[in-house]
Amino acid sequence: MRLSLTLAASLAVSAVQASPLGKRTGPVTTPKVDDGIILNYALTLEYLERKFYQDALANYTQADFVAAGFEDPFYTNLKEIYFDEQTHVSFLSGALAAAGITPTVELQYTFPATDVMSFVTLSSVLEGVGVSAYLGAAASIVNKEYLTAAGSILTVEARHTSYIRASLGASPFPNPFDTPLDFNEVFSLAAAFITGGSSPVKLPFMAFPMLTLQCTQYYYEADRSSVTFSGAFKAAQKFGVANDTPIYAVFFSGLQKLPVQVRITAGNSDYKIDRLPAGIAGQVYVVLSKSSTAFNDENIIAGPAILEVYPKGQTPSTPHPKCH
Image (cartoon, rainbow, N blue to C red):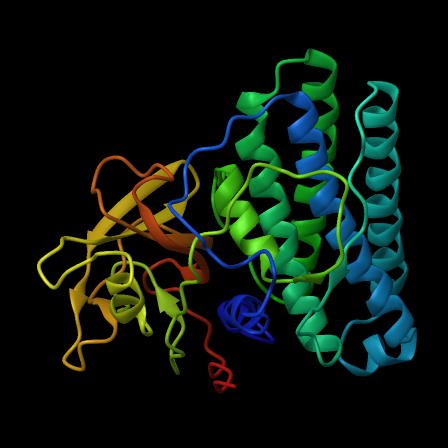
């Protein structure tokens, strides 16, 4: 792989800590949704993706991509991905208007991509989140026509993900199942990129406190690697977590949700686990939870963070990129 997907995900979440939507003002609770809210939720994500690709096509040329190692027809396919996201925006906006529901609008965004390589790597992460968002929302959609449309968009987003991952030298399908995420989990990730603007639509979602992975010089390997959550215990204390409060790092991979109890590091600031669970792979999400069995919004105290995990014994032979 040319660049660590975990580094890209960490950079994405930490680069925009001042997001106006990213601050928790009270307990996060499970939102009540209907089909109109879900369509506006999807439109919010599609606006973000459209702007992400629009900026890249404005900032980088076909020659820039070729020079970075992405040979033709990558640039042409990238323009097709942008067209897909634009079409999704138009479709969802139209569906909301046809139902007499006010559609949300494009906001202001900041993306921590500084060159072609970091853009493509972040693209892989964002497309993966998009897949998880549609998959997680599917069970809450009542109208069968909306459900079919959402499923149609989901499969296209999944093809985007596989194509970008393959272009980076990663497995295009590292897990036999994609990973669903709930509304607040996705909103917490999206909020990191939203830096301003206002919408006539107020969605009932809240962002969890940010969860930061300590940078490592090694690839994450299932059933082997340790993970340190920088400053996580110190941050959790603000919400009433004490030294003896059991806290679990819960890893979402495919349809699995695997808890591992964390420990406080010697500096009394970080949480750490000594070994990732076995059987996880690809773009994995992790949250911190007060429960080892009920991973609902009321029990999550931070996250999600994103890490790219390799099966045991299958890490790349190339050196891991340096921390930024």
